[in-house]
Length: 372
Image (tube, rainbow, N blue to C red; front, top):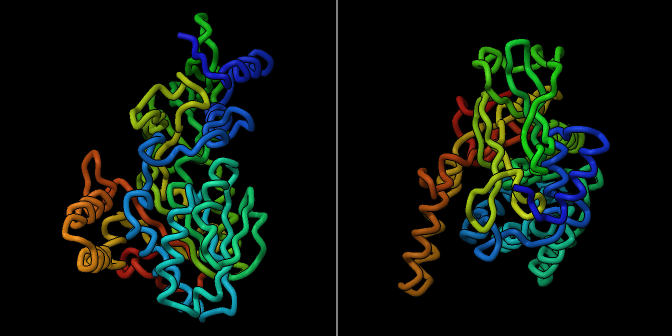
């Protein structure tokens, strides 16, 4: 069935002119088209939107990230100024909670300048409203490369899953790029390019090369990871990547669409649904290590938050809140740490990046869990 989404007509015109469209280009247009892109036109978060992120579940999440940043600042030698950078900051909830918690570390709080990397006009306005009352210099940028140089602490919570993903399909003669075409019914459909990518086999992780015929492999551009890592190498600091995904590169299709808190066909309504794909943490770590950044983890979100003191913070909140609030606080802890269909504790992973001078980061305590 042909979709009625406004963006659909534009994508059909592009395909008519240039031929079938790579999956990554389709995903990019669906999310970031200047007029009809999903993130360009709306606030997708919360119960009125299509999904809920950890900072919206509980203030405890952002508070723990703020205390994590304050401890990283101390490990950095407490520089006179530090850039607190967030990639894809949503409504600004995480940053607001982090800065409130950071009042417990006044030296850090006074040294901070906030830099938010956000392309969505709708979400930028939400962030301005959320952070309006905070006495911290705040700046917005379209891309990380526009953020000025300086010692940096970077947070990327549910950022990488929304970056466009490339797909290839294994056939008898090699790996073929997966594309989006228009079928005879004028609906969008997946197909593959006729000629295989001859060079691609040598770039595959070893475990993916032996995948059976018909397997799909996904990968993203590593330019954001390289930019983060280069910044940390040049100016010092650390980064947190928190997202849902897998610790080891593997074949398998994870591209999905979410609309009105329910899964939908990724091709059905361009620009009206959130498109995401699982994050390959091994690929991120490898890209960071390739230019000399130190990596920490990845570890499951549940373990990371517990090591930062989630249960202690929850107990503190319950001690000062009305008794009626306790079940809600307990439910938030469960949502952040449990597994299963509704829990985020095991599906979500946390990876730390740092300049080589930082041998350890808060939350990554075990030597066996830290890479070089």
